[in-house]
Length: 138
Image (cartoon, rainbow, N blue to C red; front, side):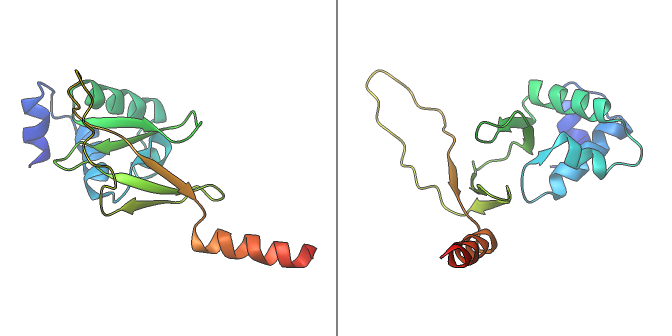
């Protein structure tokens, strides 16, 4: 869907700054922090990126999530399918999980509308470094 149409349908003005944030998130493969988005803008202030991201969340265009005990928020366009991520405990690298490992639960008296799942472990490089460090100690 066209960015201008998404913003208009949400009752938002199509400002250059909103469009830029939306373009960055549309091109992203993974959720992005405000700092990540800010780094890809041309002189937009970090506080403006935060305000835009929060407004887009409020309007249901973006989702806002934290990752394991972090105080940093990550923003992602809300699309048709939900996504899950594997997160390296050492370097923080995120990788998309291509399937949903959770079947819709049947909870008596409760209508499930969605879920979130984060998978933690070590990426191949960090695991290799851990093993190398372990061998050095032995």
